[in-house]
Amino acid sequence: MQGVEIANVDTAQMRRAGKELLSLALMDARNHSLRWAAAFESAPVGAAPLQWELGRLGWFQEYWIARNVQRQRGERCDATRPKLASILPEADALFESPGAAPMADLQTIRQYLVDSLETTLELLEGAAEDDDALYFYRLALLREDACVERFAVLAQTLGFDTGLRAPLATRPVRPPLLFPATRLSLGSAPGGFVPDREKWAHEVALPEFEIDSQAVTWAQYGEFVEDGGYDERRHWSEAGWAWVQGSEQGQGRRTPRFVDQMRQGVLQQRFGRLVRVPLAQPAMHVSWFEADAWCRWAGRRLPGEAEWEAAALQGATRGFRWGDVREWTAGTLRPYPGAPSAASPGQAEEAGTEPRRVLRGAAFVTRGRLRHEKARDAGLPAFDEGFCGFRSCAA
Image 1 (cartoon, rainbow, N blue to C red):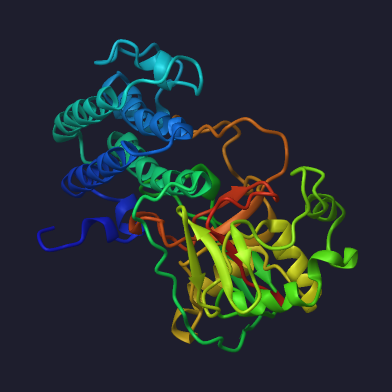
Image 2: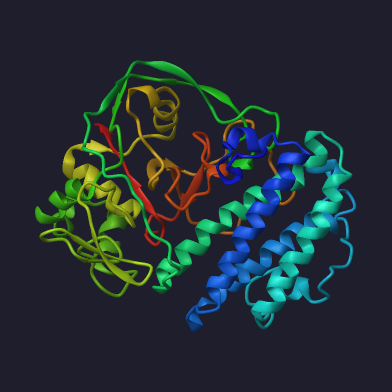
């Protein structure tokens, strides 16, 4: 792997990574997390969730690898079996659930991250080269990579300048792409590490559809704002109209989150700095409600999950571009047919009964090892703190 940028190894390869590649990637991920820890030293008082997330990375890795006597069984392990003691005696109290104990100091967290990784790498060296034995190492790696995006979202919400910038593409708007009717294998097949949300591959029939070749830009979104889109009830779903009027936020909404101005250009707060955003960049920090309203106004619709995935897999050579912002789809997050009835060890999702909308693609802050055409993320329809945008389909 000498000379390879380990952070940008493609996701398909990373999900099947052997011990050597995993070892390099785990070190890279932990070094990246430690750089965030250094940035947190100047974080505002409200940044405690950042520190908790950081400490939980070490806890999660240690809990499922070093402390798990059945780690070699992978997904077949008994997740209820008692775990061994932690190298940090109070780790469970500090990091198993948020707010359960006083926040650990940053120096303790940093040392825990260093020590827990050292143990992980020692155990990895003696592990077998098969999917079961490497399951928790792959899971811990991809989870740590995913946490980087949560760090960035929290920093953006707090207005904390991390030095991170948003190098979004400024491509000219290209015509939509037309895809013929086809059959698609939606989801992922067994082999390597497969996130629960992608289990399992199943065939779906897709009629002919037209989809934007790229995410909706600020110039396109600005037309909706200028046309009074936030004042017209007919563009919004019932829940979306209640949201935009302020029933959940305590104030009305007239632009996407963090935007200070949308006339004569876009001024948006990014990591505590007011930035003039090029109109050719994708609109960002847009909720599902806003994406849906824009589509109604434009006489279009949000793509279905299968349409988005088919376009991403088949349209790269035709100009289908993704990866600057996560993209809302029309779908509500549900298990695929044939999905396991119970969560795999280490993959249990947070509790919540409110339906979440599916996000596809990746954002500029998403690490290269997580960029995958089949990856599924999700958020509540009001979620606009994330680096989210959208594209549309012909109605």
